[in-house]
Amino acid sequence: MPLLEHAAPLLALWALLGYLLGSIPFGMVLARVMGLGNLRDIGSGNIGATNVLRTGSKTAAALTLLLDGGKGVVAVLLARAFGGEDTAQIAGLMAMLGHCYPVWLRFKGGKGVATFLGIVLALAWPVGIGCCLAWLAGALTSRISSMGALFAAAASSPLMVFTGHPEGLFLSIALTLLVFWRHRANIARLRAGTEPTIGGKS
Image (cartoon, rainbow, N blue to C red; front, side):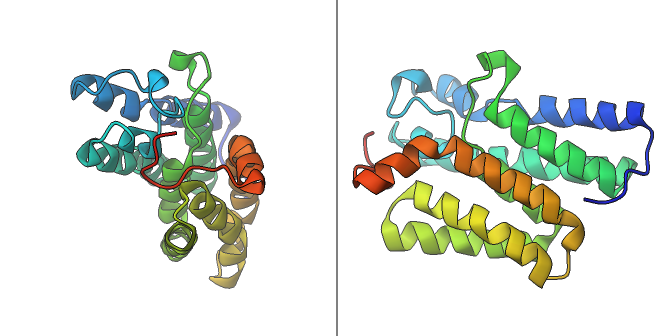
């Protein structure tokens, strides 16, 4: 974590802006706009791209992935441009929390994988690329989206160190723990061998 160089009110402002940006439920908005129904009544009921794919619309799923990732990117880059590394990391963390626990949805949001990837891409692009590759490796070999998510999250902290970005280590640890926490039900199903594959109905 970088040194906190800015005053508490400014840090609080970027924390709020990061949270509000992260809390935009793009999956639900796209599903409604494109006439795909209420995501809460589809598949796992999650608001992320994997569940949007269960509506049968690859376009909506791809847009959800890009927009959920994009809000992580925007939160970090805006905060960095107008503040510094401390505001960027705080905005990134709060964007992740906003996605996972949006006030608009009674704090019942998504699992944060796309937003996580966007955040680490904006923080340190080599780490972000490495995490995306880890997601692909996990998802393609297992055909299970959650496995890719866990691979990507677990890779982020070592990559922060090995690529020369130790200032992002504590944030990557926090994000990893949050990703694993949000996937605790998936982990239980992985252990039981009942986790659905990519494109599955539930």
